[in-house]
Length: 180
Image 1: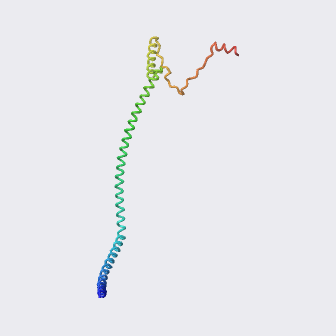
Image 2: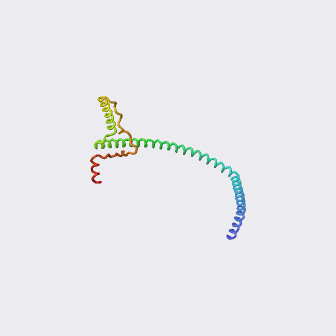
Image 3: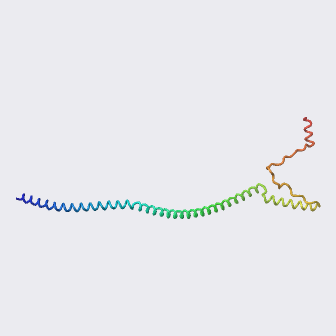
């Protein structure tokens, strides 16, 4: 009897479960159908509006790129002007140092030349002035017109001295005649 009761309970459970299963299955089937249709509608909308959204994103990207370029150019300009200023300062300082080195070199060279007895340009100018003064005094005392400045101050064209012509003297002529 226990067997029969178990069988009857199973039949009732399957018949009740079958009704339940068919109702649940139907609602799940309807829900799945609605989800499918919603997905198809979303896909269709995305296809229609996808081009519009893409164009809007491209426009936003362009405006963002322009803004970033403007900011970058501004920063580059600021950095460039700052570097230019720093380069100018460095160049000025370097120029000052070169001027100092040049003056030190000139002073030391002048001292060395002075120790060797080489007259400086100032010394030569002072001597020329003194010679002119003395020439004027001699001319005044002798009663003649003062002579013009010496041609020693005239610049040489090629840096070579003019060749001198030797005039034979009696001694050189006497030496040459016995040998001839």
